[in-house]
Image (cartoon, rainbow over all chains, first blue to last red; front, side, top):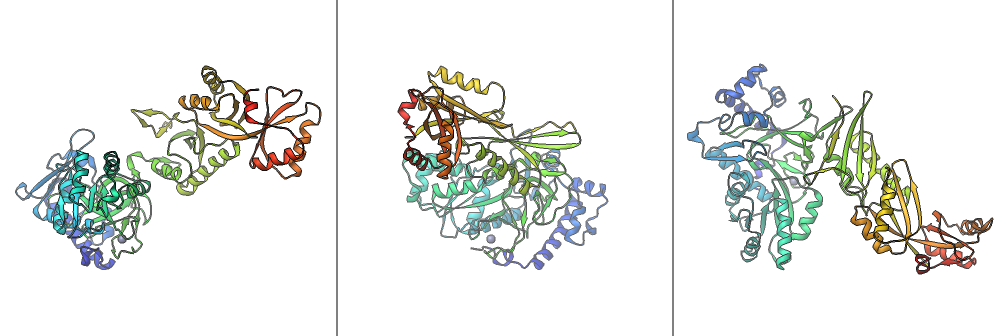
Length: 433
Length: 143
Ligand SMILES: [Zn+2]
């Protein structure tokens, strides 16, 4: 179901006209009201009036997470505090959180985007939404909540925790849509099983899962264990919260970005250069309708690619593929950008191979050498030398094919890959640069 | 007619083979036959032991990857041409030998060779039809 038929199916040309007008307004506004942006624009000699096409956005400097921290808490707000009606913050793993604000109109925009998202996952006015995202400073809980009300559905603001009680309530209240993180969905399945509750007997038809990266394999598991359609949702508080992009139930193949509110770009994380459609790189967002906390070319550090192909659902918005990693993890090997998660995907596709691996980068002479250590578990093991040699060859070939680099693949015994605090050390870079 | 063999994945670094034999001896497992196939990176150790379950358990507990395969133990006359005769029978029947290795103990006056075939049943049928003695598992483990 398409919630906002007019906007979500706009012809490309009309959409770009709207984007350009909204982008011009946003740039004018932040230049006039946020000293940080004025200084940044002035440093590169960019005047908002110079922006004549969407392409011109490339001349505008990036904003990073560090910039947000440096302006803690309200330095990047573009409206006086009297106009701010809500404050959220994302937990920083180190130090201060990043703080974001919303005007009444921002809250309205966000609710509409979440209503669109819920609708894309199959929710209607008649549905009962069990919302197990946390309520609080985190944007997940309230984001879904306002969207559900906007849609006209019944929302159960259960928030996180007390899983046994959650299962009793979802059963008794007859919830039909589940919203939570994908890992919590699997936890629910586990606890339900312990309690002797079968998801087959519950009324769920679909679920909207996000706020953390997940895989197709996890989708299969969730759909099987929870007996519902699992749909991916993407968002980050810096941009607005959940509801920046969502998958459609029809295709479940990439998340439609709400491009009438956000302009997405894919850049090379090393050079900042904008990459052609389809390339894998870092996702960058510019908000074009937000009032209190606009972000200009905000570097998400999420690695993905954009798919401009038309979708069966009828939405004309570009689709972003699943986030496959973080740009912080990127390695540059012989000039090629390599993400450990890409190697992981290559391994996951090979029958019997588990994603227990480590990348070792050395420099011999002037040449970078990549060695991929892969642990041999029981399902990949064979008593025949040739079978294992063939396995090495397939991994080498697939890495070359998908990543465009030659690697030396070495099979190693299980648990030989160093782990620190239970987490595997994925990269050892021995290059002295 | 089949003999159970266990195989162990080993990285090509010093002391790994000794580690396996140490673990098995501490678990009270006797090794009846052993062969190591190796490449520049890794090796595959194949073993016939007196207690497969115990061996497997001890090795897994120590973090090794262990596999199980069925192989065939064949009596070979301990005189020139003894092995050739058997290989000739297999070749004529179009049966491919994946690998083979010798058993430590003799069976009477005959040597014992372990064969790994892809099509084990067919190989056993051809060998017995041609008068070759195939030794059954329980006898092999206690030889
Ligand atoms: Zn779609």
